[in-house]
Image (tube, rainbow, N blue to C red; front, side):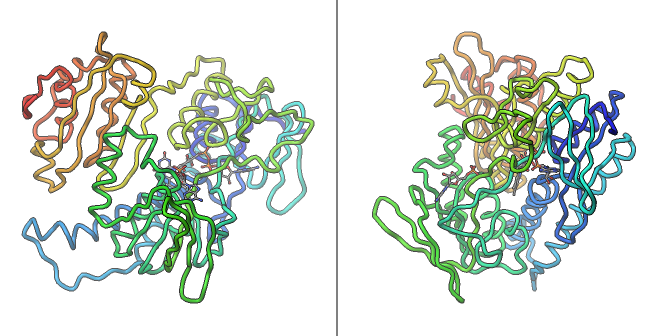
Length: 473
Ligand code: FAD
Ligand code: AMP
């Protein structure tokens, strides 16, 4: 039986990173990945590179350029005549980025001597992995350690069965060839908001139906309120407390039935995106006698080191507990590779940044004010509006705020929440600060270049002590 020190199942941002790190550390490594892209070609990179983070950001950027051209550039004194939109070219640009990025992972595998086994992986007893190539017979491989990184897939609901035409999931929403006039989105979570934003910026009338009565419940309340206000101002219609109960597809569109506090309602749209969350990929992944334990929600059960109940078998990324974020999975991948190589791997789950790539962007790290108050942690906080930030004004992007929350006695930063321009980039500074156990005074006393958006974060830190310079404290 062929053997490897490490066999990784799945080559998304969790699995491919684990495989590369393991190989860097001198371990013989194979990575089993069975994904085929829409052209039928085998591709590495998982959800993130093929149908997630990267293609969605490509379309968010294209749609942002278009929207700015029509709605922001005139304020700069620039007007363009005959602006036209070529959705097919936009999708083709996105596809090229995906091809380049997934091809890049292939090259990295070659450079690091990671064997890419194209097909399906399944865990058998005793760290034996059954590999079934796309065409060919199953083969048994012996692993010193196994890393399961099989990711997740969109949840489907009976109320809105996908037909690939009128009713699609997030992958389908990246493939529209024209702008729907009326677009419905079930679920106002991260993916629903990002996909809704893309098509709204390109001209669709977008209605989001969200079962929960609180908008963006995971975010800090103040930030979520501001986000809802900004999105509604842009024309995204967000109907909260709206639980979808059924859909009817006709030749002219989709009629969506939902219930809210007023009773049974309907909404008719041209296209409907189902974005109600994702579930872990565990089907046909392990033999019954492997005894792999799942948790009560169907994720593979792991401890803080991503060790499953079977010694030497690890699981990382979307297939285990924790936020379904690419960088969380990648960090777990590095941790397990280092542990397997006998080093001290570690993930600080308290400093995982969250980002929503809407306009304005939303990003946070650490805990929300409501969570800290519920846990009776004494806090003080400071905010600063981008309206008073010179760079944001110069960019015509002066919306939103930065908010820093610190412990009332120790001043240690417990959470930073940003809604505003480039929040996704601004958050990195405070992740680092929290990683180093910074106080809000540390951020406040750090020199930030002028004029930059990052000054808003510093001013929010100053504001914790009522010392902000560019606002009345
Ligand atoms: P995946 O990326 O899902 O990869 C798992 C891989 O395993 C897949 O390629 C699959 O084919 C393979 N596989 C499964 N079972 C087997 C098997 N038995 N044998 C062989 N191979 C198998 N996250 C962010 O951090 N930032 C973002 O901006 C962001 N945007 C997103 C936008 C969208 C539209 C979507 C859908 C997701 C987005 N995410 C984002 C989430 C992110 O994509 C996931 O958190 C991330 O891809 C999870 O990585 P993973 O490696 O655990 O799993
Ligand atoms: P996320 O988990 O961030 O991807 O968000 C998915 C969202 O979809 C959650 O906020 C859910 O409340 C919402 N959701 C799930 N099922 C339904 C449904 N049937 N109707 C409306 N919203 C739903």
